Image (tube, rainbow, N blue to C red; front, side):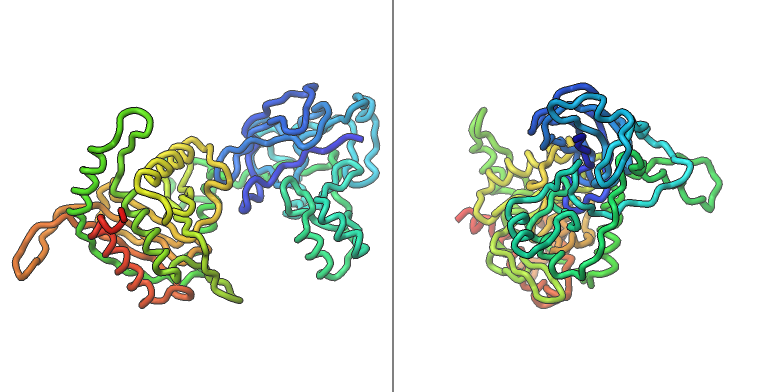
Length: 430
């Protein structure tokens, strides 16, 4: 029986995406694991791998189509032994049924009537099969639960253990019939830009999926997290001397490194988080979560928006390793090639605008983390030392913290540890 290819959820925050490019065409044979399309998510451009085998019989969503909802059918696969007759004249009779060749959705096409939006999760049905993990199947069988009534939240809509447990706790209800492929909704019509108060000439640039997610998450952060801000000035003349000496020792060719001031910042933040775990935490209504590992996110500006790749277990890594990882992650972020495991998670974030000459700024917390450190430019400023005026290279750093999990005194103590490490860089090398 024909199998519907569904728009996959390739990141935890993805509800819709752009089908950037088909890598297979109608009539091509597909094996499990083949990369069949490139999907633009809210974070990056990801490869979509097939989990079924057969022939790609129909492409329902064309290259470049935007606003394609997760779990919406985008193509049809015929299984081994099936031919076009399996599609011709077929009358849909239930979930996953396929009618005669449907019209492909054109990029930006606006239907005459906007179809009802599908729920964000749908039963993991493909043809007459239910896609579920072995553990989910066993648990459902033991409890007498019909998997056809369960919404899948796993990869590509697959039903997993948590879906079965949630269904067992929820009141039983008669599941609504899943829309057939023939009546699959087209991508949501593009919203017209709101009328501008000023009628002066202007350009209209459509918001990318990534930009929309950034706007939503940061709006939620400012609206729901009680931010407070603490700024501290760090003298980094000694750090600059150590940095110059270390870079002078860099080997030629393979293994070469070039340590930046930001690499020292990442190292100092990681060591401070290890010493002061209260800052390596997340607030929930039930409890505060304190993370075992020190995973530090580093904000990277890309052409499509901000993304925060993660340096895992940063407190266990030296400056050269941190430098290499940050450079590699930043390059992949700008190329849209980060894998989910490279940007998901993290307990604390660093945002550095020093390279733009910004003296100081306050960043917005990256939820569900408790803090983000905004790093300004290092510049020579007048300071008082031993009662006399002197010149020092000073870098201002501002902590934005969640007052629910990291109140003012704790935030100040964490910044004090960070300052001590930055101003005594040799202690970071021990």
